[in-house]
Each structure stands twice: as C-alpha cells, then as structure tokens.
Image 1 (tube, one colour):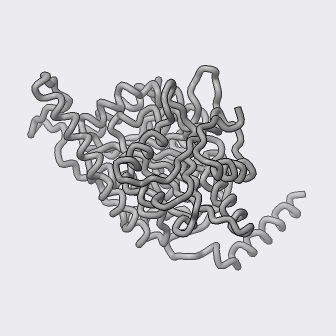
Image 2 (image 1 turned 45 degrees about the vertical axis):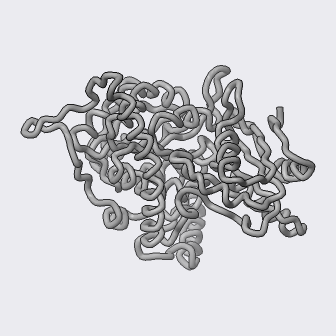
Image 3 (image 1 turned 180 degrees about the vertical axis):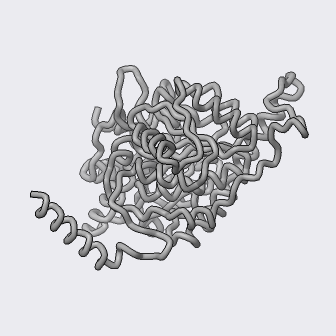
Length: 406
C-alpha cells in the first residue's frame, strides 16, 4: 500500500512538473492548497509584527496555521486572545505603536469587533483583517453570506471582496500596502467554506516577491515617549464632524490607491482584477448584466459563457472594492436593456445595500437602464449556474425585486 501510494505521488509530481502551468514565473509556484492555508502563508510572508486571533469558523484554519507558524519559528509573534474584541483591540495598540498588524475573523466575531472597527478607522490606524464571510445569528448558521462585512460598511474600513482563492492570496499584500499608504484599515473578504476550505491550485506568491512589493512599515506617527502624541482624543461638537468628514473624503480618495496597487501587483505577478475597484466580463456588447461580489461571480461567469454560446448577449460586472464604492461602475450600465444586482445581504426594512447605492448613482449620472434586485444565497443557500440563467430570463420582462429561492 505504501509503495503504491508513493508511486502514485511520484507520478503526479512528474505530471505537474511537465505541465507549463506548474512553473509559470520564477517568483511564483502553483500549489494544490486550501484557500485558508494559502492566505496564511501570504500573511506570514508580508512580515506582520503583531498577529492576534480568536479562531471562529470558517476562518479558523487561517488562525490555526499562523499559530503553528509562530510555534515553528516562522512568524514573529502570535497572540491567542480571549475574544475577537480583544484581537482588534490588540491590533489598535500595535498599529498605534508603529507595528504591522493582522487578524482574521468572521460573522459574530466581526460583529463583536464593531465598536473597535470604528475606533481603528477614526484613529487612522493601518491594519488588515481577512474576513471569511459567514452569516449572522439568529438563527445560528455557520454558512456563507455577506451580512457580516456589509453590516460594517459605514465603519470607515476599505473593503475588498474576492471571487476566488487566487485573488484572496493576491489581495493580502495589496491590502497591507493600501492600508499603510492611506492610514486606513483594510478588510479582505472571501467567502466562508466556498473558498476558505476549498482545495485548488493557486499561484502562491513567494516571500521574495512579496518583500519586493511590500516594504517594511514606516509609521508617519506613532506612540513614542521621545515624541509624544495623542491618539483618539475627545472631540467636542465643534470638531467631531470635521474628523468624520475628513475620514469619509480620504476613503473616497483611496480609490486611487486601490487602482495604483492593482497596477503594481499586476506588474509583479502577471495578474490583475479589473482596475482594482471593479471588473467586467463580456460586458461591453452585452444587453443584460449580472452585478455582484464574491465567489458567486465565478458561477455568473459560467452562466454568461453558456448563454453566449446560445446567442444571448449577456455579461457581468463584479464589484471588487465595496468601500470606497466605485461610483464610475454605473457607466458600464449605460444603454443596457437590464441590470441584475445580486446580493447575499439584506438591509432590514429597506432595499438591499448595493442596489440602493447603484440606483442612486445611476439617477445622479443619468443612466436609465432598468435595474433589478435579487437577494439570495443567505446562510449558504445554493445559487447555481441554472439559477443565474433563470434570473437573466426574468429581467427580460422588466425590473424585478425578488428573494431568490425563498
């Protein structure tokens, strides 16, 4: 049995080595690896000074792997804290002292961080969270939707949503760079279980490549006994509004940093995801568009390919950066017969978040394409290629507002 297993393994390695996809660039090696482990390896090679985690499903494997890396001497530090609130609080202190700081969480863990998320952004402290998107209780669910991170959209954090594990691995170095250049914290979101526990082939950037792209952090200001500063001070009504508006405007300005870092990462890795803010797929000549974020967009690509072969002019637009919101994306809707906005999140008692924002901006820019709103995939409910095809068929008859699969 052992000989047979070893022989099969050797044969597999030989086939991989012969493949033109196995070694594509000198700096990158394609591995068959779980998404969470790939993310943990990239985090390690970004050289964080402080990592603080309280494991919660489905981000657990990232925290566990980083803990083992610390035990094995591969990571500078790792603190197993008593809660997610403690984790983000520790990152605030670390970043204020000039350290590169990281944590991972999701769902109730991210919700427990809520208070400190606002503080971190308001204090202009660079840090990175990888959020493994998961539904919020109640009822209890460990499965995927986007309610956790979408609920934090107004906290002042930049939010990047990944469609696959390759993008998640690529997004982490960009997140550190964007955060440290803008002094705004960044949240990298990838779908729980659909991506976190998926084993697939990924070009995992090697340490030398990451270090070439991401220099050590040099804090513009930090807690220093030789040069004392005050952070998070009390603000009277005369000044509080000014601080909040300054943050709001700087988050908007960060669109340029997101674009710039996508260009820079594309140069070094050979991979780009649209302009960093949003990405099109067969959208230019499409009559109908599917709009969304996260892993559902890979199914949407398959649906588009299938329908294109049937002679139907459909395409998609993927929102990659939800905050700052890419307002120029609505120009891709101009002249379309229908735009289908699909969301794995609900704004209780109102229209869904992304649909509301897109509708508002379309009106402001004079884009009059019919726009439809679909809610689906909540708590991990399946949304298949066939479902997406059916949605495209429904919007041909005019705008739709619908909960899919209820």
